[in-house]
Length: 265
Image 1 (spheres, rainbow, N blue to C red):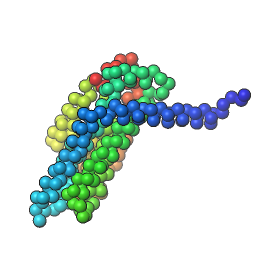
Image 2: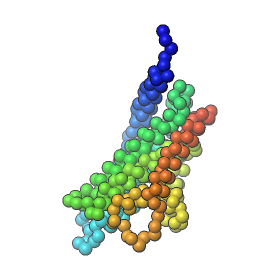
Image 3: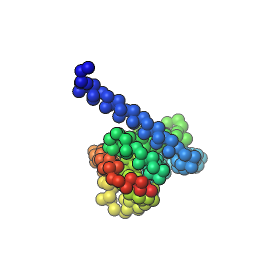
């Protein structure tokens, strides 16, 4: 028999990677959607919708609906629901697998370590983007069912998906790199993205929330023109790309270390 060609070997390798990706995603789904975690994420994503019913009943007749909606979507979804949901998605599966030894078994297989990290990032980022975008769309529809004032809803759907995916990449890497990743992630959301980012404008260029707002501002005119300028869309895209690359590279390197059972715990 003739030796396998380079093309055949390449196709076989791609098939193995695709198979391992499906297996890793199925494992992530099983570990992520526990009753407690699913309830926590549902509460976070449904909270803006509940507030939307109150807004709709109490909006003054002379109010600027577009600006009001933009402010509320920023405060409740971009600042709270999106990062915390991404944190739960990025850390939960890895923490559970590290505790019961499943992750140690995975890294002893022939699957490349960077591919394991990439699959985790891809799973968490995709799901966080979809859930965040869905929460924005539902909240916007409840608040303004007949129209999309100044394209605010569409702008924030894109911004929330962008922010959710970026946060998920960062938090997946965090779960691989440090202990107590859930606590560290909450501190990051509350202090860096919340207090420090609002206090020091220079931090805006290193803030996922501000990157998301840059996307939203490009797509709608609902924001106050007198507000302080923030990062551009180019900065946001470069920052998000760097976050994904670092998550895969650093995560893959971490998976080569022997103290694997301490990941995410």
